[in-house]
Image (cartoon, rainbow, N blue to C red):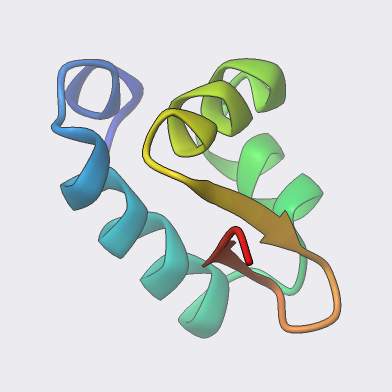
Length: 65
C-alpha cells in the first residue's frame, strides 16, 4: 500500500484496508499514519464522509452511532 494508491481509492475500500492495517500491523492510528506517511486530518475527513470515526479503544474506525 502506498500513499498515492490510498489517495485515489474509494472511501469504503480505504476503510476496509485501514482497519485491517490497524488490526494486523499498527497498535494505534498515530503509528499507522507515521508508517504510511498519511495526513490524519484528511483520513479522518474521508472516513467521516461515509459515517465512520476512529475509536482508540478498539483501534479501528467504527460507524457513528
